[in-house]
Image 1 (tube, helix red, strand yellow):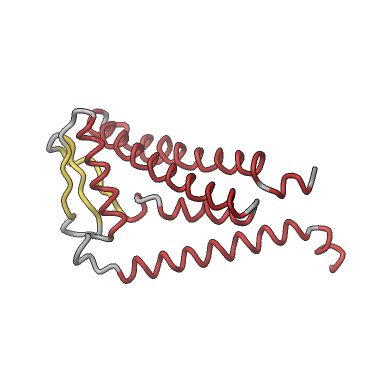
Image 2: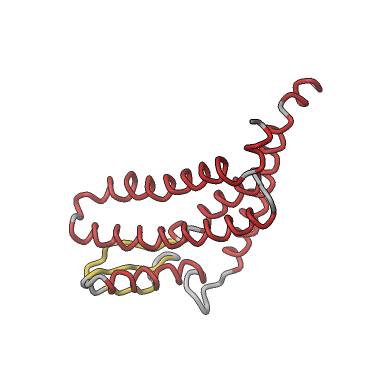
Length: 183
């Protein structure tokens, strides 16, 4: 068993590092959500911010968007040209996707400075693409409501997770020091 662990030491280290970072960040985020009482920002600061910024993007491309607190659940209602099209819920704020991204990058860490800059730049890119995704999805749901299922459950998750995968591949092939250890 010890020989097997030594043989796969880098794999075991990657998995343990990934899981540790992922659990710590996820538990921290869960605590943040649990302690967000919605008194200042409803339902929580990040979800509220994403709703406001998505509204601004939709307005910028010529539609009239409105947001309001959902009366029955912790989310923000998003309307396009006075038509309810979507709810911006906690899962729409990209934080859980960023946690997944960051966990992988740290588990495959390169030099500190490069890792830090890549985590920061990648997180900002994921956040911005998520805002664009919500705006396009909302406009798509306004214009093509009969396409709701494919837009929301297939195409738009594919965009965000596909981008995360591409960022991971760029990291592993260009910046990670682990790349050179196995070459």
